[in-house]
Amino acid sequence: MTQINVRVDGASYTDDVEPRTLLVHYLREQLGKVGTVVGCDTSNCGACTVHLDGQAVKSCTVFAVQADGCQVTTIEGVATGEGDSATLHPVQRAFHEMHGLQCGFCTPGMIMASIDLLKENPDPSDEEVREGIEGNLCRCTGYQNIVRAVRQAAAEMSGKAADDPQAEPAAVDTAAAEHVAVQA
Amino acid sequence: MIPAPFAYARPTTVEEALQAIADGGEDVKVLAGGQSLIPVMRLRLAAPEVLVDLTRVEELRGVREDGDMLVIGAMTTHADVLTDPLLAQYGQLIVQATETVADRQVRRRGTFGGALAHADPAGDLPAVALALDAEFVLAGPGGRRTVPAAEFFVDYLTTALEEGELLVEIRVPKLGEGWGVRYEKFNRVAQAWSIVAVAAAVRREGGRIAEARIGLTNMGPTPLRASATEAALVGVDVSMETVTAAAAQAAEGTSPSNDLNAQADYRQHLAQVLTRRALAAAVGL
Image (cartoon, rainbow over all chains, first blue to last red):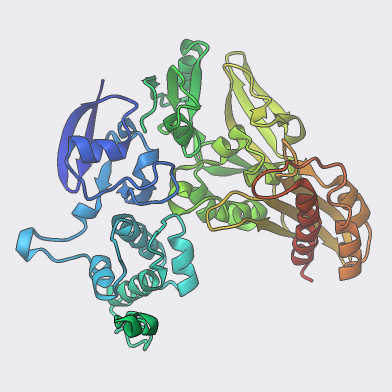
């Protein structure tokens, strides 16, 4: 066991960990920060993305001992305030408003990667957003609205009104398809 | 999936790192950015007894000038490479290839030296290092030695690094005025490894090509130079015809693998096409 000191979402922790413990397992199992999820376990999907000293990393591909002395921010730490009075991070809010999720499993990682992208590039084009989140997979393939959400968040964070007519969620036709309707 | 247990050492200097490697015995592994090693350990394809983590060895980070060379610390991350002012000026081929490595999160942790020491034939940086005739500075218990790129890449995932040695820095020539570069990569989906890629650096003198350096990614167990193409380009006029004719020789002497992504003959075809595109872009056609 190795002792580590980390600050996670603003709180300090001192814990003993095995060197082989992955950061994501430490966050979930020792700290109960289950907002960060394990998707693929092969360093591909990005669902476990957190910020390590302000930089987006895949927490399944970092050992917890490597976070010793570092600041970790998870999806649970990006909103401000507590409980009912909490204010969502603009990127969280944009994912909500633009329907940037279906099943929601990739969302914590998508948001953490997007926040990192917007810090570096506050006004990304659609293509730059797609490249910026290429390390995150959405198995619902809901990328259209994810890209819209990131651009909406960018507009809000830079104080620009989102007057782009495209800045709306894609129309979703919830009516049954014709052949289904006929059967009914 | 959780890696097998290991003892962990976190040195802060090269000297301490070499000592930790020596103390680690036969089954010691060096951890750079960990973006290839940790996945492999999770799958238990590797289960070293001792892991020497270089993340806190500050002297291995950063890029500096040394006359007409750039010296890149082995632990310089891909993200650092992309924002380094010296590389922006003199190392565009490295920058272009690094932009295509994996994804944003992996580039935050993964390192220039780690990718080279790993020597994956589908990795993007070995072919660039070979094309640039990079020099690899290796530190060991008996001191330092310098190995040219042509001798560093020995075989599949195998380099000239001896037991107990550590890659500390990589020296590459500055490419300044007259040089044009391009890294042309073909892969199937975002963040995927190269099926084939071509690193080209071309120096023009007036309307002619004075010198061409071409590295091939994933065209054999090690990175390769497209020597026949390089030779065919020396002294020729810059035109699409000369570039196309020379690129047709790009696959000569290569022995690419057959795998799920591509057959060998398809890879050889790709090498020619990508070489033509890389050369055309490098000379501004």
